[in-house]
Length: 338
Image (cartoon, helix red, strand yellow):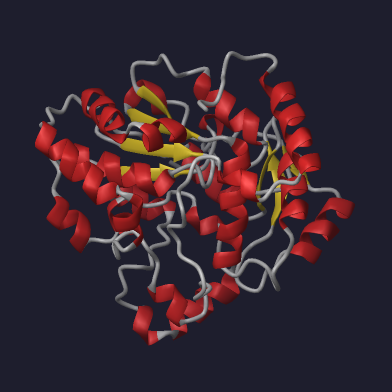
């Protein structure tokens, strides 16, 4: 497909100068691209480099055997990827432990994250040349992957290929935005996206004002919620996964037409138990700590708790969050499980 024939029917707008200044004062862009461009009528906030990459993603040829896990960031993506991959691959735990999840389940838009300085930094580090921890796939690489392809994305459905749902299976996971924001904040601390430790309240204000990457949050979730009855869509809540992982594992198995035994369900639950999951080298990015791209104090897999936001919100933030959630759910029957 030539560049001329590629379609990408989205308006592109830059973040206004005042907001951009706020972002630059809050984040450290030494290695990471700052999000400063809005795409489409809903104004999803992404990096400037996304326009070219996004066009390529939008035009990826979807195969019937493809499996996508799509989420807003920090909604249980890694947990769900591992669950989906294992069920689709007949609970092959040995291969799951031997091959890094980033290689089994590439992140389709990961090219937009790291800037040229980071790429040069990684290229110079000989210890990473063969590391399975590093996998920033290009769209061209995704196009050339053998089937079945397992692909992760944080993009909303509207920015993914139009034929996606009518062609292949998609698992979408949603999570209470308060827990998402707390997890996203700690994630940014862990990947050294702050020049120094920043306060959470400022991050929360960015989040609710659509100044965090992949926002607006509610528009992202509503797009998937509207498609929850599509035959190729499985819509899960993180809270459901946390409360009833065996039941969710059976739902995933049914969605993929897989027979799963009680013994396999128990193995899956043990494998995905948060304490075991945090120690699983195939889903963590421990090599990046050694070279300084990740903070040694934290862990890529953190606490995974439901309701942990209560430890980060004061009374004013709690009231503001309740009002913000109520306003955004007013036109939908979407509700987050308690």
